[in-house]
Every structure is written in C-alpha cells, then in structure tokens.
Length: 223
Image (cartoon, rainbow, N blue to C red; front, side, top):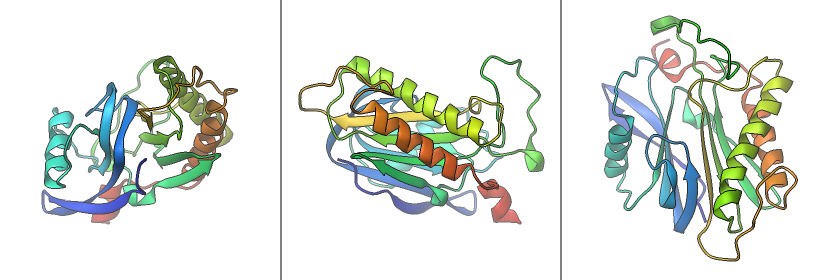
C-alpha cells in the first residue's frame, strides 16, 4: 500500500518549492485524471507538487517526470500540480479507506456555467482540489471509474456545505488506487462496500481543507 506522504522540496527558479511524495510498498492499480500517469494502470508512486501562481509551462507531464527523476522515483507514477502549499494536506481515514486532499477553492465554478475571465498575477486565487484515495481492496475496472464519480460527488457535497454554489474548480484532479491482486469488487458507488467509506472520508477532508482561507503558496512566499 502507499506510505504516508513525505513532505520535501525542490529548488526551482530561485525558490524552494514544496512537494508531497507517496511511495507504494508494492505496485498499485490506479485510475487518475492527473497530468502525469493519468488514465488507468499500475503505478508505483504519487507526487503532488506545489507550483507558483505564475506557472506557465505547457508541458506539465514532462515537468512532473523531471521532478520524479530528481526524487529518484522509478517506474510509472502519478503526478499532480497545485498552487496550494502541499504542506497543508488534509488526511482522513474511514474503514480502511485513506484520503489525502489539498484544497484550494479560490476559483469555484459550476461545471456547466460559462467561463468567466480568469485573474492573473497578484490577483490570482488558488483554485485546485487534488484528491488522492487509497482503497484497501481490489476494485474492478468499472468500480474504479465509479469510485472517481463517488469522490467527485462527495467533494461537491462538501463544497456546497461550505456555502459555495459550485461543483469544484477548473483544475481539480482525482487519483484512486487499490491493490492489484484479489477478487475485484464490482461497485464503487456511495452505497457500496468501499464507496461509502470513500465518500465519507473525501467529504470530511474537503470540508476541513476548505474551512479556512487558502493563500496561494507563491503569494505567501513573497509576502
């Protein structure tokens, strides 16, 4: 299974920028919407890397692969980016399901609403919710996809309870991991054996992470 995340940093553009690293004790099956290692497959590690709000690279997967190389991470993995200080990760556990979330809700939106103009520079607000989930039992392929929907539904429930008329932010990402071996569970919905604790843990993590004002790491760094 995944180890507890290690908080470290890399020197980049004159700054020591934080990142979180999870290592798998043995390879895990994952489904993810991350820039690096997205899709479905076996993964050995996960990285959630803070970036400044001025981030402008158009090759995030290559950037994350570079970071993985600097960290000595071998094999395929998952890489996520956020303007949130990843040191503020929120962890929750429910019935063996473990969730880690970095929560930035500065750019809340309704998924189907027209896109407004986005602020840039000093006025930019951090707005990414990255959620990493570990389920202790093998999920079938359809159940893994179902689990992503359950994560999203629980996230939206928490966001609404925080008083925001929103479904998320433009750049949210989800990663769900489970063992490669074992009899696959067929369902990952919010009333299934593993989907129910998954939903509760995600809801609790996003609710806790969104309860206070989240200042972009780069603004705090230069304040």
